[in-house]
Structure formats: C-alpha cells, structure tokens
Image (cartoon, rainbow, N blue to C red; front, side, top):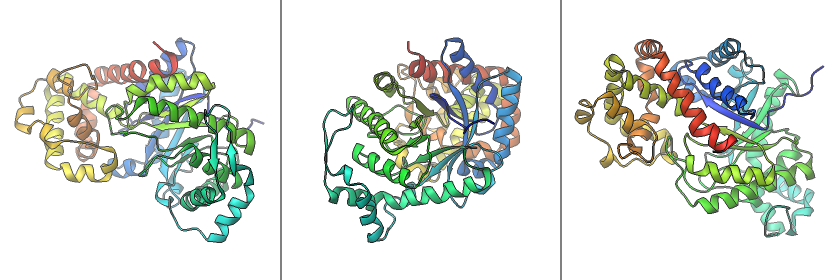
Length: 420
C-alpha cells in the first residue's frame, strides 16, 4: 500500500489554457532533470478559465497524461483544480489530485466572539515575546493581537476546512494534495498572521502541503515584480522560518512549503527566492499561470501569415474592450492606456515587431509591458475564435512549442531551481 500523496520539494505550476502545450511544458522539467534537479510539473487551470475557454476539467488531465506518456516522464505529476471553492469543487473531483482552495473572499468573514476567544485560549504559547528560529527579531504578541488576527482569518480557515472535507469525503484521505490560497486579497499577510493562520489550519486538522499568502509588492499579470526587493527577500525568508516552526510545533506535513502565485514572469524575485530557499533548505511551488498563452501568441506572430493576422485581431479587440477585460483583474494589472499602441499602428507591424513588443524581455527597447498585460487577460477573445485559434496553433506547433519550452526553462526553472 502506498502512503499519502506528497508533493515534491520543487514543483512548477503550468497553465495551459487551450490544452495544447503540455508536452512543451513537460520538456522544461525534463531539461531540469538533465541538470540533476527534480521539478515536478503541476498542470493548473481555474474554474474561471474553464468557463471562459469553454473547456472541461477532464481536458487538463487528458493533455497532461498524453504528454507524460509520449515523453516517458517517470516522476510524479499532478493536475491542480486551481482557485476552487465549495460551489465549484465537485466538477474537479474525478480529474484532479491537487486542489488549490481559495478562501480570499472569506477573509474578514464574521465569526462568533466565542469562537475567537476559544481559539486564542488554545494558543497561550503565542502571547509574549515569541522567538522563531530564522526570524531575526522576536514577535511581540498580545492576546489582543491573537484575537485581532483570528477575527480577520478564522472565517477563511473554517471555509478551507469545509472545502477540504468535501474533497476528502469523495477522494479519501491522503489521495490528494491540498493548497490553501489567500493571495488574492488587499494586503499581504505578516509573519505573525501567517503563524496564526497555520495554527488555525492545524487545529482543523487540515494537512495542507502548500500555502499561498499574499506577498508585499505588486504581482501584476504577465510582467515583472514591482516593489522593494530587499523587503521582499526579508519577508519571504521570515515566512519560510514561520512555516518550519509551525510544522514542528503543530504537526503540519513536513513538506509544507510556500506557493508563489506569480501571475507569470516575476523574474527579479527569483534570485532572492533562491537565496532564501538555500538558507532555509526549503521547497517551493511556483505557479506561472498565463505565460504559456502569451508564448502561443508570440509564436503565431512570428509565424506570420494567418497567425500574425489573428494576433493583430486579438490585440485590436482587446484594446476596444480594455475596461471589460481588465475589470476581473483590477488588483493585478497596471495598464497605462496612453502607452498602448493604436490598433492601426499595430496592423502594420511585422511578426518580429509584434513578438518583440509582447515577449517579456526587459532589456529590449521594443518590449511593451502595458501591451503584454492587456494580452495576458485577453485570452477570452481567442476563446471566441476557438476553432480558428486552435487550428493555427496546431499548424504552427513547432515554433510555439520551442518558445514555450525555452520560456519555462530558461526564464523560470533555470534561474529559480538550478541557478545560473
């Protein structure tokens, strides 16, 4: 009998919105294996993305399984029901073995005062000067601090427990990997808040293997991190120390690790993350999300002809529906409309010009982060032209696959998990 399903030390969440690039994505993990580093692939897709694209959860598993068989991948691999909630989880139960339970909307949810006081009463060890190995300064905590944090997060923890029990009732204990996500909220969690959240999850006997807090700075879609890198590195290291402390104190799974929901391409934080992981001997789950969809469109542009024509049409329509497309992502896009080229200008671009504007190369004078963010959230336009889009992706498979693999391995896997 095998033991509980466990996520490897390093894992890479890859989004494949149109289920065409699983093989190219897996090749990035194979390249890492050739360098002696095991990076476990996790194919993730949210309910929102399924609804926009018109796909079913079974398609993610099918595409991943086909890639694994074709390339002879012998290591573990997983399918993540990304950002699910109680009302959406059921359709994923037969097709996923990794569940990202999103409780951001339950942060601040009202909880009875009696429950808050009872929770604080169970954890007198937090009150006073709490020294956590690896955190430079002791946390100075009062009973009021514990109750304040509990009032903000206990409702979210209880919601995570409800979703977990639903999954467990169908799949069985140990048959799936659990992540709890609190990243899509207004303010980052402090080390104190993360400790109390983990203690509350442990009280609920929820065996999470990854947790996705909100970090300091901005994680805008498709572009680099915006914020204080030294502060990020310090807080990231503190979070790693808090996780290790919580594992030792409260019996959480030993492989519990941070999950970074990058929104794609946060290149500047990879070196600080790598240093922190080495200092703490810690693992990491990185979600790269929509970077693959952008590489598909770059490949179509580079292919020219009908592919370039479609890429230009997608941009023109995205520009026309800018507010509508960005509204669901308001907290994670920062687009200056004045810096978006006019559709008439883009219509005269060559494939090389379009690709240069879209490809995330911060050193290139042609790279346009505003255009990239807009196209990142514009995949619903491609979904409306689904048959045409998929036909062109298949016709231009070779160039697109090369871009996808190169992007994931050279820009994400190598700098983060292998080093330069």
